[in-house]
Length: 198
Image: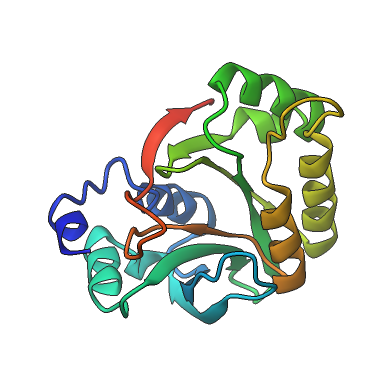
């Protein structure tokens, strides 16, 4: 949306993570993104996947990508990262249900994801829910294991903490994805930094 583009703050947007990724893994690491059209309660979204080097992904790049979206389409970062040797890895991504207390997220992350993953979790308020990122790279098998652990964060008898349908969609898609824009009637705001647990 035009208003979103003019109020864009790169320091609180997930694009700020790209500089950290670049510092850890190098400027030429390839990051994966998608433009998608969200269809509630459908098996698949309409989605176009593309890659870009970490060095090229700047706040200006994000503004340009958002300005070129068709009506009702969104921009997302995908979990897939191709390292300098072309190996496929995944960033840790989590879509929480609503806006649970950060203290609960911290506790469950430590208990189910381990101290390394929990220590690197960076949280963003997406408007409707909280999004979590971890910059440690995982191989495909470890990524599947990670998604299983996310499901276990939802305890029997408690309100779900992690969006199970999101996990289902991401398993089918073969990668995780979290929204970076607010270009549709489903979303009122782009994600903004909430807290870094580190």
